[in-house]
Every structure is written in C-alpha cells, then in structure tokens.
Image (cartoon, rainbow, N blue to C red; front, side):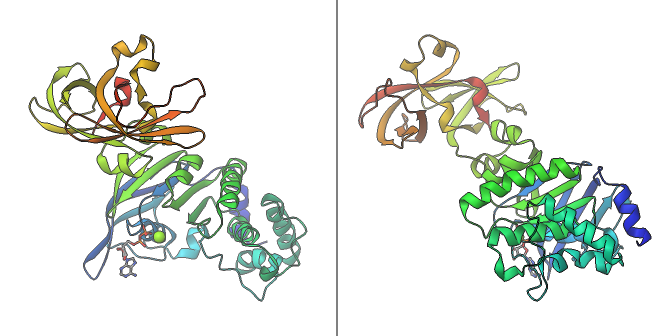
Length: 371
Ligand code: ADP
Ligand code: MG
C-alpha cells in the first residue's frame, strides 16, 4: 500500500476543517464569488444553498482546487491549500452527472482513485468491497454503469468518492437528476453515510427542502456572497434578511413603521394594527421596515380560545380558500390591500372560511421577524 493512503486510512473518523477567507473569483471582471468567508467545522455537514448563478459551484471548485481564487484564502485543517494541486488535497467529489467511466465495471470505477494512488490489487478489492457495502450495492462490482439505474449510478459515484477515505467530501447537486422519491431516499442515506464516516461534507444544492433535511448548517448564497449561515432552524425561524426569508420556505412580508422598542422587541404599526416583532438590530422610531411571518404560524384568532391575547392580531378579509388535503391555504387581504397567506392544518372540527368573510388572525411575537 502506498504511504499516502495509509496516512488517510489511519485518520478515518475525523473530518477536515475548512476555512474560507474573503474568497473571490472573477471571470473577465464579472464576479462569480464576491468575498465568501466561512468556517466549516471538522465532521460537519454543511450545505451551500442558493439560486442558480449564486456562486455555489465556483466556491466548491475552488475548494477542490479546479479553480484558482482571484483573491482570498482556503485553508484545510489550518493549512492554506491555494497553491496545492487538486490531487494533493485528498478530497472526494460527486457531481450531478455521475461521470462514471462507461467502459469500466462498477468495481473498476470505484477502484480507480485507489489505482491512481498506487494501492495494490488485493487491498483495492477489499476497499472497493467495503465502499460497495457502505452505499448498499454489495454484489454489483461486476456490472457496467449502463446496467444500473440513475440512483445506483449515483451510489457508485459516491462509493468512488469515499473509497480512498478522504476527510472531506464535496458534492455538487448530486441528486439533481433523480426523481423525487429516489432523491428523498438518497437524502436520508447521505445523512446516514455522513454519520457513519464522520468526515466533513460540503454539499451544494438549490433545493431548500433538501438543504433543511440534511444539513447541520446551511450557508445561503446570493450573488456570490453568503447571505446567512446557520442551522436549518435558525434560518427558518430567524431569517436575517428578506432574501433568506423568501428563499427558504414561504414568507409573508408586511410593510410597517417602527413606533418604539420594548427591550429586544420592536413595536411597529402595520395595517392599522400594533405588531410586536423580534429583531437583532435596533431600528429607529419612524423608520419604514418589513415584517415577515410564516404562513403556517398564523391562525384565525377565534380558534385560539384565550391564548391569542398576548399575540399579534390583525383584521383581514378572506379572498381565497383552498382545501389541500392535509391543510387549508387561505389568501387574506389586510387593511391596506397587502396579501397574506395563512396555512391551517385541516380538521373536520375546524370551520372552513369562505371568500369575502371578515376575520381576525393571530400569531406569536416570536414568529414575527423584522428583516
Ligand atoms: P451556481 O453553482 O450557484 O449556479 P456558479 O458558481 O456556477 O453558480 O456561477 C456563478 C456565476 O459565475 C454565474 O453567473 C456564472 O455564469 C458565472 N460563471 C461560472 N463559471 C464561469 C466561467 N467559467 N466563465 C464565466 N463565467 C462563469
Ligand atoms: Mg452549480
């Protein structure tokens, strides 16, 4: 066995830490990545989430070493790797298009990175067998890629990316080409694999649900910058700007005017109502702001028997009522015409609202964020 592989094998169980500092990449003076600073912890499952063109792939390519940063630094385990060629970084990678060699068997595909590293045949067979077990494809070694389904091919690509025991695995929309059911199954498998291997995963997707399901932390990217970093709960419950509130989940946006502060709570006037909101900054009185709330955190006040007293309340008119099985979705109009979406879990015991009906909605101050 080559000494390099022995080293990486012995370090199994701990993941690399990755530090991006002021990372930039421009193509002909157009910025693809415009100053990304991010610390990814050892063993973390971190997802770069953002719309198409937000710089996710470019960031990943710079970590892998296939793109050279225009500015900034990348450190792996505290050591700058900017001048290090990709193969020396010892990073596993999986892409959306599986990129398997069609003329090689599954075992040969998975064994390829080992062969490149000079691992002897017997050891290679053992490691390939282990990798096939890990991705739940034991016994598939003799097949060719064309004899496998899309999901199976992607598992082979995954096995090939981890067979040499990297401490860091980069994945760029690896499930993007698969259908929904398969994608959901593989999301759970990715999590299990992450837990089993204990290595650091950096995962790229534009699918917010996928990011919320799998990640320890998510870095939301927009226009080449990180807009917010946090746990799925942080981002969903406490988006710190309008982009994040709108990109992750569904949000209502209500224009409001700041009236004052009560400790950490902002008091604002909104649609003729006094609304309390949580806010990390301290906006000045009289300033115009936007309040955001999630549709499923809103309730019709008359269903809340008493507990609505301490909540934000607002008068609305129902303009649309859609029964969607597990929940009802209402479109509501506030005093000045702002539209609000409310999602209520359905129950045969709850009266359905009709279009044109006047109602009062209520929601908790904790679910009201000023962005
Ligand atoms: P994402 O993966 O989030 O969709 P990318 O990192 O692929 O975004 O691209 C970010 C921006 O950089 C896009 O506007 C894209 O057109 C541009 N870009 C990416 N690669 C190149 C390239 N090789 N040459 C010129 N522009 C590029
Ligand atoms: Mg991309």
